Length: 439
Ligand code: SAH
Ligand code: SF4
Ligand code: F3S
Image (tube, rainbow, N blue to C red; front, side):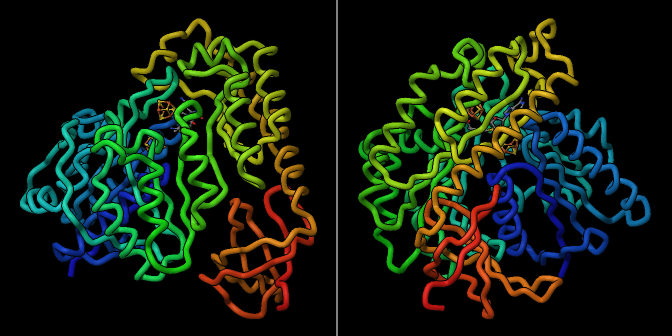
């Protein structure tokens, strides 16, 4: 049997793509290896959200290119978001690449592999999605199964490459999603996370009535004890129906990831985000008033072109005022083809961006600790994801609460995959400590 190694950079969508690739490749005679040097086929799933992620993709592929010199039979596939964007340019820059696979051609992989095995060099980045059929998915072992429900984005935020790399929004067929959820549950997964660049857009291109709430209901109705999550929401697209659904359905967890990007109205406008701070605040407060103990997390960018010190401070203020539970942060990185990248005269100097990012991170730490402290002494249900014996001999299980807080709990036993009740004993910045109740 031939061996395939897949390296995945970037977001959960890429990780999910990798699980699908492994599944498809097994079908045509490849088994998975964790050692690139043993592989006959090397695949990299690339990310182009920031320059750094793109650079990482090319440097990795450079290493493989050198390997190929001593093992010429090896085939190299460059897939994912940088591939979609780069096309022919990838082969020019890295001539040892055999296949450039665009994000919308994922399901064409088995056919293309057969062709490169016969010596062809192929660039397949057509934006017309290659029709998917029911495939085997080799999921990474664990507790949570990622299931993409929609792909692409129509929002064109001025800083963001995703609409250019993932194409326009399209929903996956509900039958496929539900079948995948059933399968994952039968394999022992205890949590289903529905994935999409903008999950609120689910169903816009399907029959009437088929939307995110509807889909949550279908999955909630499946047998067994398990949890359901969904990411990412676009602030102004979250419907009252979805908020009500989270309350109504027992398996759907109290957690929303709602990127705000900036707390300043002028910057938000320049980013082409369709809301101002007051609107975001209203959405947040509304969710909080309906769903007790809900966790709301966000994303922020520091140093967007033209961002003044005062505008940046509005972001810090927003984080504190809204008591956001956690935020992903990044310094603005200009992306080719995007609108904001053309505003070179407004670029914030690198050093300034890094300074702002550091302040943003410091603020984030304070918000996280404050958020975690809310749960001191509380009883919470934890789904255990992991067991470790630490260097000092301590045995610890780690898992998440329904509202997505990480909890470390002393335990003699590996309880991975179990739901346990825990009392919170300590709050740290990034996690909680707890003890088993009655354990
Ligand atoms: N669909 C989601 C975000 C997907 S991209 C949304 O609507 O918010 C994930 C995050 O990467 C974004 O939320 C943004 O904070 C960050 N990001 C995107 N483009 C970026 C860029 N050019 N520079 C820095 N961060 C960026
Ligand atoms: Fe990017 Fe904006 Fe689409 Fe999110 S909504 S993926 S930030 S363009
Ligand atoms: Fe990166 Fe593409 Fe995801 S750019 S963040 S891998 S959608």
